[in-house]
Length: 250
Image 1 (tube, one colour):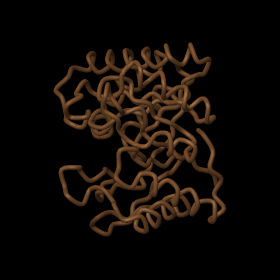
Image 2 (cartoon, rainbow, N blue to C red; image 1 turned 135 degrees about the horizontal axis):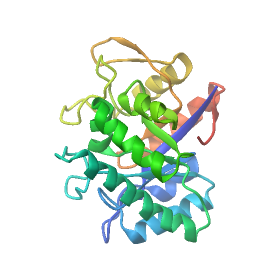
Image 3 (cartoon, rainbow, N blue to C red; image 1 turned 180 degrees about the vertical axis):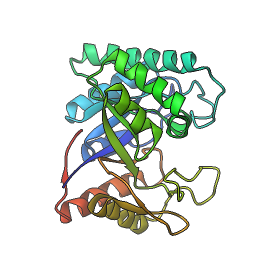
Image 4 (cartoon, rainbow, N blue to C red; image 1 turned 120 degrees about the vertical axis):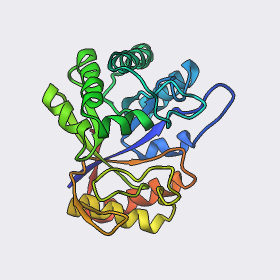
């Protein structure tokens, strides 16, 4: 068995530090780098690309909604063309820094509300995927397993990677529990470990209501802004290796 381990990084902004990128990045295989809309800026993007290159970690674009104050986690009423353009804009920003560091973008994973909007809305999912395809059709598109993000990207012709979450709870329909609910995020390391191993080895997850959901797990996400992110990543990596799972980049 093989799995990719990804984390959202580069989410600092100006004088505001955020997350433990330096400690986490040696433990993962793919970095989703914020592109300046929900978080990150030109200096942070530059430093994070260099950090990923130095650690031989796959570089991914992490485009989000233009909502710094809400960290890109609040829905916005945008046209499909606006969504297309904001994805292209952010991919271009990351590509510029990848070029000067002589590395390539490997994958794209939408962030926060944009990710959730695409997972639930076929038209939005298709527009996001179309932007990625038009920018570079060889990029791997990362989206929520069993969601429109995956199915619409595949229809367009993109290579996809179905993503599962170590630290999020699931609804019975396969969607993630809204962050507005107090139990949406798993904070107990043992619980997160159990969920990860089940998803990777059995291709299943148990919803918050006890329903067993079948899913494909190509890449596992641990959020870099979580209070226990470093502990989660360290323990998940160790446990996967004990289970004989090979951890490799997309």
